[in-house]
Length: 234
Image (cartoon, rainbow, N blue to C red; front, side):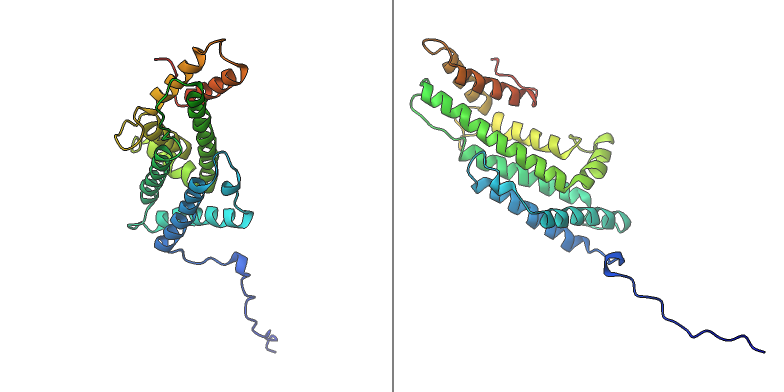
């Protein structure tokens, strides 16, 4: 007797969430750049020290994060012209563009009387507001590109191919260069750090001594500079 043959059954379909789709590095990179660029643009137009422009919903956050992850995986398995170094160069350019905008708009405080308390206080409060927004922006972008940051950037830095070890360090380095070391004719009349130091000197030399409010402000500025390994001492 022949054994009873079981009827042939087709394998069950793979659920969509388990399916693997090929990733196109070019279109994925374009998506990443568009999304992150819109975040920097929103931060530019927001009021200083505002969280609203830097709040993105969970679904959008996950989509950008996954796009970065998929881009890194795709370029690793299929090397092409679109590789993680392209993302690095683009991100550095985006950060620099943001810092230049802040330097030439919010921080371009021109006054005939730089020795006045009002001008000095405004210089420091505006700088701190811009710096707080930039810190929040840095944290958001760092989270979105965390996979690339931990793997590609860390490896490239350890092999001495790039000068910074992380996305956070890249932001800090460009802020320091564009905001605090800048001395161009079309922006601040003095280097940013020099303007901050001059403003602090005005507050400290005020009649009656420096107020508690101004003292707290100076401490905040000093603390923000210490992260960049800078001081107000001249």
